[in-house]
Length: 351
Length: 179
Image 1: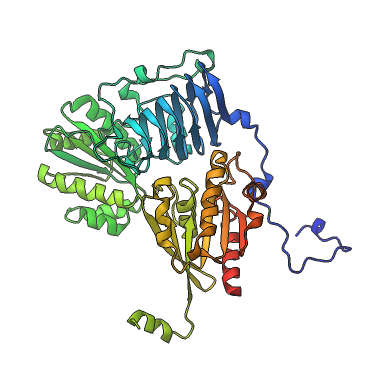
Image 2: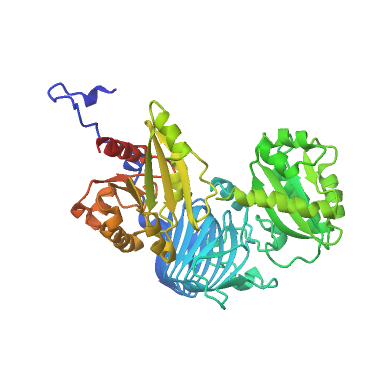
């Protein structure tokens, strides 16, 4: 205890404790203007990497603007915007859009929420189930974007690039006989919705909107499956980084397994009991149980004729002789139960 | 008397159970607070569609905490949870200034509820970690909390970092211990 607190002439506080000092009492004041974009019309504005750095951000009352936040943030609210194009880098908490219409968006977040919105097209990466309320004309597609700093920003926001529930929307206010939301057409091009900024501010940001460059693996989510055959591949933690292995596997599948489509990916922690329930019949069960204790697993579902064969071949190609622990479905019949077991487990953890 | 109740009665030092109701607008941070109380991971919290319950122990009490979804559409269902509440915890997103009026109106309605009459209320001024957060004093003045006629307290907190949560729960325990 510092002696500054105990002036002898003052009676020591017996009953009342000194008011507690919290981190927010001590922090430096920020200039709200640095973290707010408001009341603009017909402008291209935003923030470059390193300038938001995990703060809250506020966007409001903009019309016909192009807004690019190329950084990670704590949480973002977007209010009363019309006819805007908005890119938001990874958001640790929620993005909440209210009273907006005719906007085209690209967001990555833990939580996605809307209320009182109309006609929003959204390329989305969301770690939990996105929700909408009193919103109509909502269209969704998978997040598809790259710039060099983006991957580290996902990590800084505590988001895994493998956890994306972009297509599974919960509507709090469904209207019988009407579709308040749907999926964007598969052939919609990112650059048509969200043209790259050409203003001087953003010249240093090396953007790619090509699908093969995207930091988030592009999944079909709940889009129609092309085949009855699926395959589950699970990369366990081990001496070789399983994120790196998963990434190389996805890349190789993209290049070589033409008839196979990536449906969903998931990164999740599993206890030994979880592993026994999901992979119970596998000969390598104990190996999986041990590996799951070392860190989260990454599960990947491919769909397409011959997907089991293609997955096995490409797992072999990326793993080679490395000591990696990987589960691949044995047969199309086994794959169907594998996919259900693994993703049902994963969905149950998302409460 | 049910078997469970009988067994509880036979215990020499029965632990007192408290029913705590967490309410507030959607996105206020109710589930994050609930998970913080139970020391659980807060990095994958889905917006609550129905409700969540957790049971946590604190100072010899068993706290049964009910966290009810806060979307406008489902607020009419809050009243289904009003039976036998020991403490009402109302959570405010201190950084969402656009909705202070809305949260004030919901709070005022709760204070009028017969079934919640006299139930002590803790108000968490949550999300103090965000730069746009109003202080507990600003919220208290802005919402006119001074006119509340029951035992109540406002506590600044960040459910995300956990700061302030313990102090709020300490008030809860002290308040019910006095009863």
